[in-house]
Image (cartoon, rainbow, N blue to C red; front, side, top):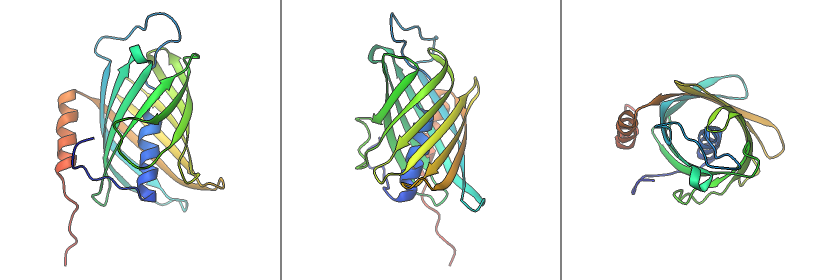
Length: 207
């Protein structure tokens, strides 16, 4: 997380945290045994895109712009992901998550990364689909401090990452649905987009 970056811990921010981070973790993970084989150039992956939020009444609204950087660490059997969101109101969200793969290399748990200085805590776990280091889909369930549960399904292709997160209240009542489409980009494009998001200021309403 960049120094001086403002983060919010409002309910809206928690939903963004869940949908953005937990849905994405898992595109690569270390195999349970033997040396990991990682495709050339795939240790770092970069994404940019947008999200749409569907309210309980079926109304949809823009959810803002997203940039994400995922680092695969086979020697640690872990993935570290950093996500920055500029929401539709202009507020900035920044979070980091760490995914840890257990002995069954299709199952994982996730926690806040050391790089996430948010005061919020969370826990989650999920199941991967596809070959090790070439996962094509995953299912994640995450629980937030207030009891909110986020259930996310993702599909990764050579060009993009599509995600849908269903948010359930502590009593199991369905809340919002958050859909994302993120495009895979170069490091240079990612860095430019992230710098632009961090530099933007919330728009001022006309008098």
